[in-house]
Image 1: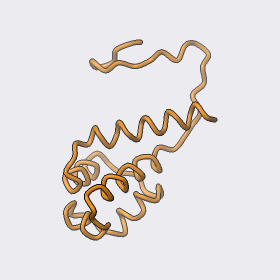
Image 2: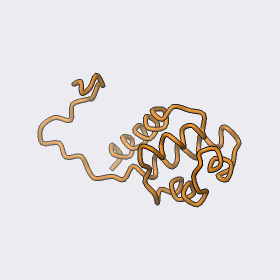
Image 3: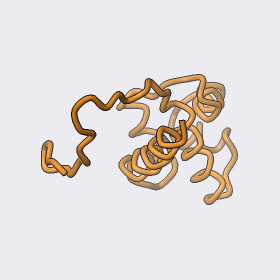
Image 4: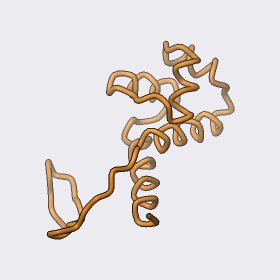
Length: 100
């Protein structure tokens, strides 16, 4: 394990190739899950986040990337911390990486 900016990272080792994988579907799925927990629709989340509902639809489908700014806005709308969404997406991404 190594530390980068006080965060713990497992070593990949020399010669290990990390396959290119898209994280957009993972973060979109976490947003959708949290929205379902709150029992709100995309339109309500869009209102709370001050974003277009079509944008959020594309994020949840994995067709649209989030900037840091929009991640913060979505997190406010979902009444959660951005790192919780990111961490859950990271776990999902890593599991998919190990299954490929």
